[in-house]
Image 1 (cartoon, rainbow, N blue to C red):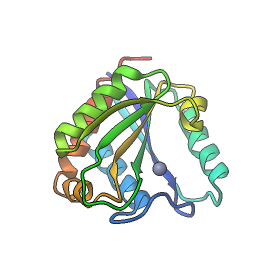
Image 2: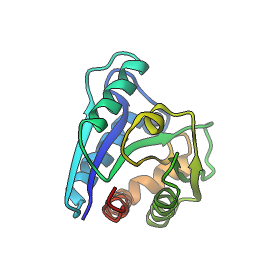
Image 3: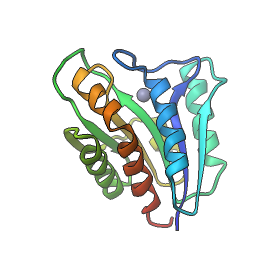
Image 4: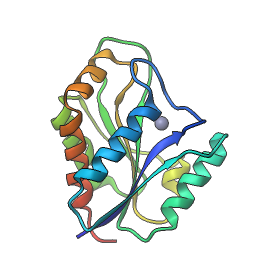
Length: 173
Ligand SMILES: [Zn+2]
């Protein structure tokens, strides 16, 4: 059984990507729904409602994750590149957790009908570098792809269920 921490990206006052959908609004919905669907040992969820700068937001989110002993820390984000009607897809960023990042991207892609962009190694992200527990950062889909956002709205529940299932299967730390 697995204990996980799950946060939404950015903060109420430090907004993320926004086009056909707003990243902060949707990341919060995903976190709350995954929290309800989770059937592992324990899930803790967090939204940053206080930070006013990006640095403050990263510090707040990372401190929250580091305050709880868990098997996997996960943050929910949405991607953006350029406005398009073409599909872009889902990906999962990792520093040390390549296997679960790959499983997560594949599961979300399968649930939502997204292109599977796969596990992406990143050594330049504060969340991955400073979170003490094993960590992954999910980019659910692109908020500036109308194809992605319509798939996301249709398959929201299945996508959240896929995330809940994969994090529940993380190996104990
Ligand atoms: Zn983001």
